Length: 129
Image (cartoon, rainbow, N blue to C red):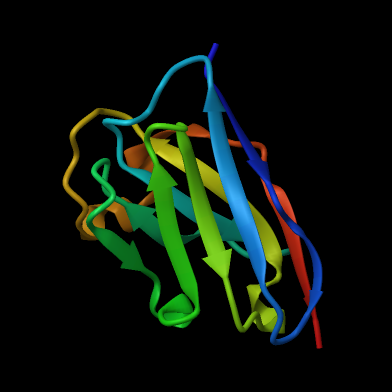
């Protein structure tokens, strides 16, 4: 059974940093596009960032560009999200996700939830002002 486990969430002051990690278990996802989404209270889940299966192409939502960096290590089967200069509006539950099919090409379609077939349980990020 495939599981995605997120870690690294927590409480941080505005301007601080956190690093989230996603570790799939049960299989390797080295040939799959992977991404991060977030959901704030009372809001819909939204796209944050996505990374190609090779790791050489990324895409971000405008609100996190220049502050967040997505990366992956296929040898270790992990994906990270480095979050710097955090703002209170970044407060949300963050979810990692994996594409439904292998060898995808990162494009605007990966900003849609339906593209992803496997999801983690989420990790809470709270940024205080």
